Image (tube, rainbow, N blue to C red; front, side, top):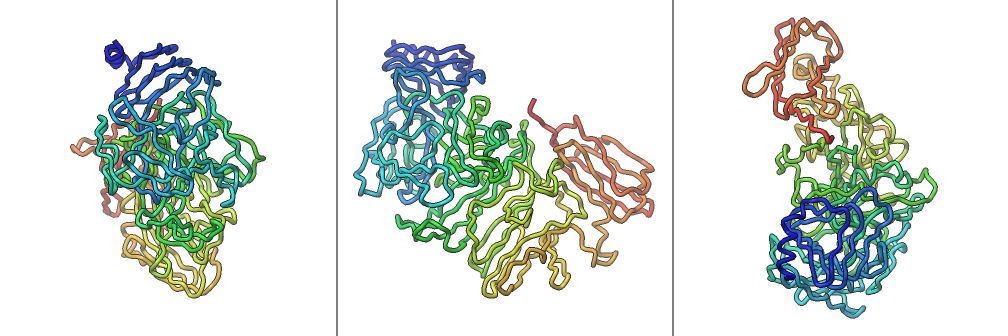
Length: 606
């Protein structure tokens, strides 16, 4: 009867339940879909709820305080790094299963090794002086279980070990395992294939639900994450008006998988930076710079950029990340809520757990698969290599709502406050930003700050260009000699004496030193702003425009505007047009013609 009952509930998991009661000896089995419960869940002894093949559990937004209870468990899988030298940052979706009402604490003794589609074996805990985890049978090294509460220093790490004292909403670190586990439990891959594979863990306990409050301290970091057995919309969480105590930026640990050591001085890692940009935005992520570290945990020297393009809008089950208390706001708390939860599969284009597996890239994703109510960000990623050894990445984003000042949830500081020997950043509000957002204007000049030591060589180059006019020139201006360097054509190398240069370098989109013949392609700048559903044609040279027409790829004319005269810019609504590539055709009265492709994507969340 137990198997029959599970089989029956498998077919109704897409329905909505006001409350859920699972009696002793019964189970719910959800394979690859969403199960929604409006209120509380009661799982009696041996009454279990299995989430498999990216199945997720959501609960009602009207719930503020969790009413979940029972000694039965929710079982949900997640995979971390298979390398026992590398950390993942976690946040448990479950707590201790008990008759007590509400969320409860978690500990790694609650982790299990899956053996069949529903059965698991509790993981073995190694001695505290053992550092290397093992995949099969699953053995975890408690030595590496730490949480990080409201600190800006390495001393903020608090060793937890085997204790079940990790509160709901608190993140924790855990290193991976070595070896392989070829057990097939019905997921897309085996438990651990070794190499660049991942280690599967079975989280079993009472599901977290409702408002989960995490304390933050002004100017200090706190490790938190997604505390639910469903995806977390990180944009909704960071931009929630009740979470003003944090800076609305998330920081994700990345570690060089090729460096195998348990000694801190030999680590190579750093924090990637995620800016949400807006509720509907796909956000912007800047890859971590792999630093080396001193014995006190402070960065020692800048190493290479990981170069990873990891999608961060939807935090998958178990994902941990850092947030920072806003330096301008008194210490307080932030709250994770059911309204921040969404059913979004980790296999989707905008969700990824940071582990050994190859990250997704927007360059390899089908752009239309990213849309579906998500607005892609137009941005440039700039890489700077120091002395042909170390690389740092920063990003410039283009949003119509951005100002030239600091915008919450758009502009992002780097994770480290340590002044490095060589550095590049956006010099904004007298501080060092790794992400800056602006409202695009072809005449704007964006200052870059540079710090140099001992005649260092700096090589500036474009890493990626996303959803931005492919015909638009991008220059690096060097104020020392008044030169403009076309970054789309080649990198710019310069040797700098020791010093800080906050007024020498700028990113620009026009080069006024070129003669007229060289600036023909800059007579008009055609730009589709999908954020405000507007096609903009800039006319910096004030040419007399005869007509502007828009065509789809079948040749059908969408509109044709004539006798437009002389203006600095022309704007045309693209509201309601289907997502596709279109052609813009422009004629000037002096018989000049320009044709350009644009991508129109006006999909929005309702």
